[in-house]
Image (cartoon, rainbow, N blue to C red):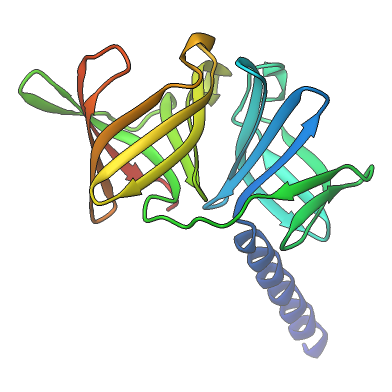
Length: 230
């Protein structure tokens, strides 16, 4: 009985440490590889790794992650360069510190300065206004999510159940005094959008983010995004 109690205690301690290490990873890590920039974002137990070159989008991969003992494990929900990875667990030997990270082969990542804002976290679109009516977007396999942390943002439209990838875009963002602004660094659907600055109205109501204004095409939009970290 005593041995069983000790085993259970050891498991509980291990799980607690595992959870704490995962929760502690939050922020943005970047590296340059030749003329290619790679951004790795972490927030609310979700991560996204994206590569682009100047104004040309290259690829992205991401999903829920866990981290322990120098190993980052990603349950891949999207990987547009190799869709066969979707649904698999991909391991990255990675040591993470306060100022950066280092891969198993010695390649270093620099941690971006912390720029905490109220919108930081993982979001999922749950409502969109069409005409005069706000329509609810039912939760299903297909989803559009948005990851925001330390002044960076990325949206991704995916369906992990069928390994579907429908587009992504991202860059820098600010949210202040009811104004949400984006500066686009990459956009999979149209590289010509890179460099654009977009401004919207935004407000938080509980776990919902009301996002309104005009799209890059000039069309009026009103969307509701809900936190997706539960």
